[in-house]
Length: 377
Image (cartoon, rainbow, N blue to C red; front, side, top):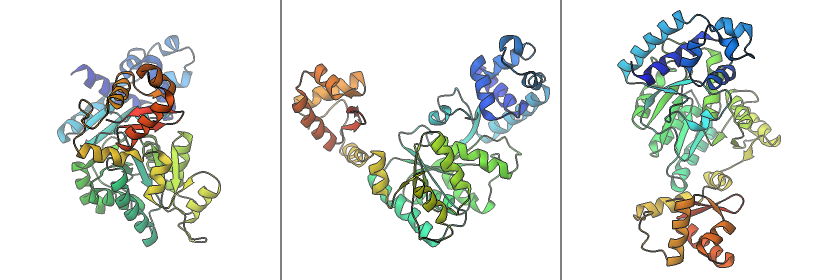
């Protein structure tokens, strides 16, 4: 067995060995550097980690059954072409890896890069009304014209989730469904056809091994993956209580942007959105344009157009000498503040600001918070 396969095996076993909260497991994994190291120190864990509780040390002592179950799962994933992504794998969603309770291992089937430049999730009630369905349809269609390369994440559930996946596919977006069970089944079964389409243009992702039932608690736990792997959460419709509100709460804890569409006062499936907006838990949006502006993604449409016209970093036939100097500086040094860039290219700040404005209009650079500029191409 290859070294990375061995680490995957021990990581899978570790998640089954200890039914502590994910944050405890992740902290333990990071303290020792690998699941293999946890296994090797299973009999002297409190010597290596003096702060380790007796209860945790005892729970980590016997690996026999978890390793047998993990070996069984390894055979299953190999047979079905499933990717096993441990948290140290560069293919693992890096936004999620930053979260304190990230899963140690994910199972993934699909073609989409989980670390794309733009990742959003669209969530809401399972009892989606015609109003909510139309909001999703218009939002996704309009987003395509403004940010053509966005990965759209949801939970493959009834209502808003499945609307988000289907409209993403219809508009040429990649879309990933985060499941509350193993990859040996699809729940609900009526979404199997959409799930098959998603495997070709997106994917299916879960932290659960095969033969895991879609229990209620699993849906709550999977919401942290939906929130954690995304730049922002968009709540379309929600009752006063619901899974979509759990996702927005987790997103807030992760310091991610949260948005909500308002609804009619008194409408049962707009109450959650309206309350969230009222309590400053989400920014109100009414369109894709609102969302794009709030996220500062306006340059994406210009970038897309620039790419379609064949502009590449190595060759800018329509750039002036000063513009090329700015591009070269950003390409070499990365993001720079205006005053830093001015010193490097030896152009006065007033003149440089005008040059940067032109480069933004051409879709070559984007301004960030704090007067910093980022090269897009």
